[in-house]
Length: 133
Image (cartoon, rainbow, N blue to C red; front, top):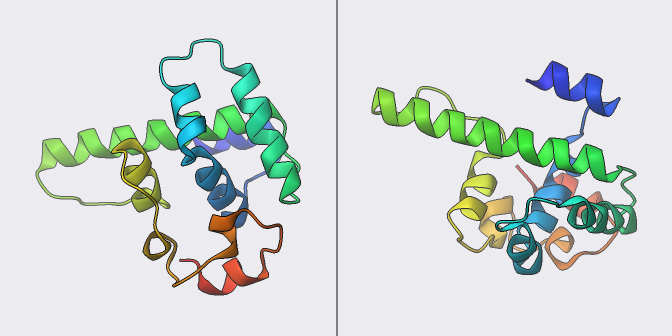
C-alpha cells in the first residue's frame, strides 16, 4: 500500500507532514464536510491550502490519497484485531486516526506533549519535532 502511495504522490510523507494532515483532518469543520461527501475535491483543496500555510507543499490529490491510505490501514488493522482477539501489530499514528474515526477530541496527550503549536495551527514545527511521538 505504501509503495503504491509513494509512486502515486511522487514522494513519501514525513511524520510531521502526516501529523499536520491528521491535525487538519481532526478539525470538526473538515470532518463534517468529509462526512458523506462523494465529490470531495474542494475539501482536499482546502486541506492542501491549510498544509501550505504550515509550509507543507502537497496537492489535493496527495492529501486525498494519504487520507484514504490512513483510513484503509486503520480499518484493515481494526478488522484483523477483531478477528484475532488481541492486537498483534499496530500502525503508525493509530491513536490519532482512532480518535478521529471514533470522534474523540485530539488532546495534547495524543501528540505526546503538554502543549503543541501544531494543535494551534502555527507554522513553526520545531516544537512539534521535540514533543511528538
